[in-house]
Image (tube, rainbow, N blue to C red; front, side, top):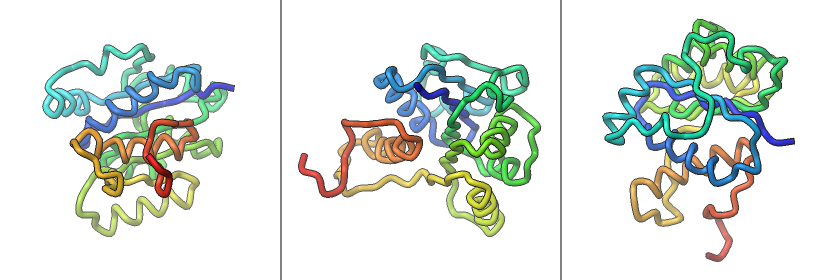
Length: 189
């Protein structure tokens, strides 16, 4: 059964990550039936600042307001089976860890945890303080996956986008999306 995916984009720096996730998912349309995107106003502003455009609304996916609790994935009965938060701000992480469902992003994350479905948070901050670490621990103990926005370099990425793709490909691997065009350690090129 094709995936039903929620992609939440918060106002943390790292719009390149959400763009690459959307680009990759567009190349793998056979693996999903629905993609619902929730993007905060801050995320829109950060996207424009970092990427120099507002192309996020050009993707053929369903966009929902951050306060639209009528979105299907605000309930477990809609059977969305995974949620990616990329990038995930520390404020969003803290609200998810605290069970505070004050907007659609945190409500959808709460649904994923209570339904024992995949919730993957690409946290984007440096350095971490103890509250960040404890919030990551709480989400992990509740069944979520923390996938920090930390690129790998053993594939020898030749551009900023290639380095960022090492993170997004890892996140999509964790989600169960089958990627055939990504670097795998120990495999010949």
